Length: 236
Image (cartoon, rainbow, N blue to C red; front, side, top):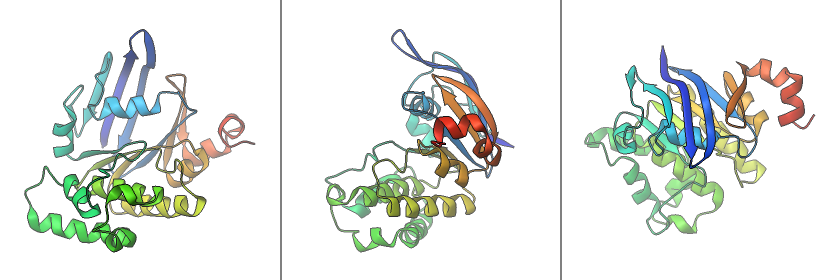
């Protein structure tokens, strides 16, 4: 069953058509990659899906219901969470306060405490720094915190926007190991990532976005083997 269905989605900034009528689906339990160059419209697509931008046309269906243009906070409460590009942590709040903010829509205190324990199991470094101001963390630690904060909302669908951006290779490896663990735990993931190789190796299927349109879609192994993808996105 498709947890997310996007049909004919168009998003404009003034006279600029950033997303030009794309279709994509993400099935329950899948990890799907959306790859493409800078400016292809990937981040804009995620923002339209999660209610941060209002589409000019098209539909977004989540968990069987149309949610096109729904306020983002209502979607968070329904289990749709975004880890934004640039992390967006609350720098003047402690790590544990940031994590608590991720659970602000929840009233199940016992389950929230259990999920906090799970986040600390995924990211032991966050537990070590739970009383530290988020703004003093390294870039990799802030990315861990951004993912952990989203997981505190108990998401069914996790949207990840450029989780490897600006990170050292060893930290990128750790972040992607955690993303795989989250997906293996049953969370559905739509991954936007400029590092096409990493994204396709981690996912089941992929979409290639170019100038606001979907130019290719296939299984991730097929896209990794595609000469056009290899030349344009894998540097081969």
